[in-house]
Structures are given as C-alpha cells and as structure tokens.
Length: 151
Image 1 (cartoon, rainbow, N blue to C red):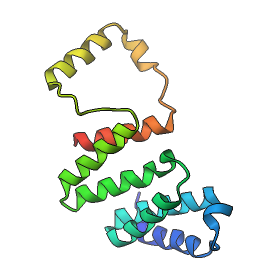
Image 2: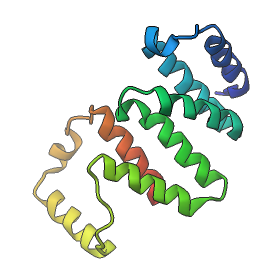
Image 3: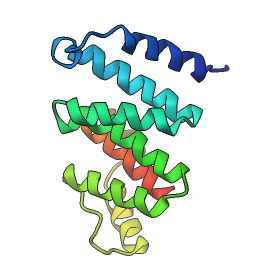
C-alpha cells in the first residue's frame, strides 16, 4: 500500500485556504482536524517550515492542552528528525510532566523491569490478552510520547 503525502498535504492545504477569517471560532473542530492532518503530512514530507507554521496556529488557537497534543507530538518528532535530539527529549519530558507523568525520578531499568514483572505475575495470560484497549485519548498520546522517548 502506497501513500502520497505530498498530494494529501495539498488537499489539506486547499481545505485550510477555504476557511474564513474567524474559522477557529466558527469551525473549531474542522480547523483543528485540517491543521493536524496537514501538519502530519508536512512532517512526513520533511517540510519543516510548513509544519512550524501549522503548529504555531494550533498552539495559538487550540482551546485545550489536549487539543494541542497531536501537534506537540509532531513538533517533538520533527526536532528528533532534525538532529535536535536533546531538545526533542526535553520537550517530550515537559509535555509528559504536564500530563502528570513524571519521568525525572531516577530509577534503574532493572527496577522498572522487576516492578513490571511483579505486576504481570499476578495476572493470567488470558487476563492480559483480554485487557480492555486504552480509550483515553490523552493517555494514548502520552504513550506515543513515551514510545518516542524510548526509541
């Protein structure tokens, strides 16, 4: 399956161009979705300038921190892709801290593995396999940040 993110970006960019002046007030959800998707395509295409412009709009007009998380994730990824890894990690840690996830405390990998092993040992394989899928969008994006920091 092939994807054409250049063409997709042009569709989202055209959609954005049709928005009126007060689109963030009058068509907030549409504006947020168009800007998020255009930014994702811009990152995929390596168009950091467009990503920066789009992200500035969402950060300025987003109504809640949760509404800005997708853009913040893309910006964090762009920093990592632009060989600005320390800045990317710092931004990711700040975002996770704002979500109530503090990774600044120093714990060894061995301690984390032991805690996880202990927690999992109280569950059967069936219980683990039948665990409900995460549905909280804020925690799903937090997991994306955690995964990005780990890699």
